[in-house]
Image 1: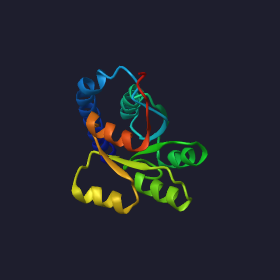
Image 2: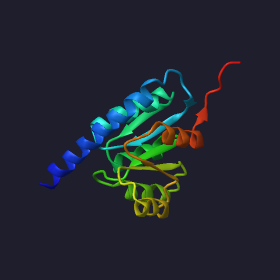
Image 3: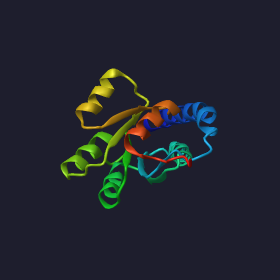
Image 4: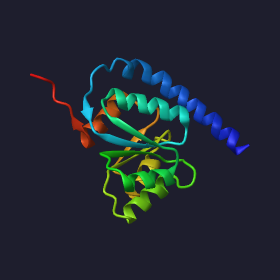
Length: 157
């Protein structure tokens, strides 16, 4: 029963992301940033949408299906930033972030969650996340995060 409820919630989140992201992200035609990012997200539909959005910004995107895979990839590859879903199998986002910090990985980590409560943001801050990005993603919030952690692409003069 719990799995069914989680699946329904994830499908609703995916629909919201899709609905909100089409108008605001669809018009992105030229790369604004360069770099490589890791997206730790267990929902395949969300992975596809987030990857497309970040690629439209000009970024190379590597996906991790769970917290354990995110830790493995973060330790073996160079990334400008990690986008970490909070609820994933094996290690959730909080556990994966704690492991990365203990192992000395210094890549900025951005928490992603549909829970936009102040208490959730505070939990993430105390856990060592560098930033917080609410789902569904909004262009302005995402772009502000990318400006902090990724290289801007210079427009030709």
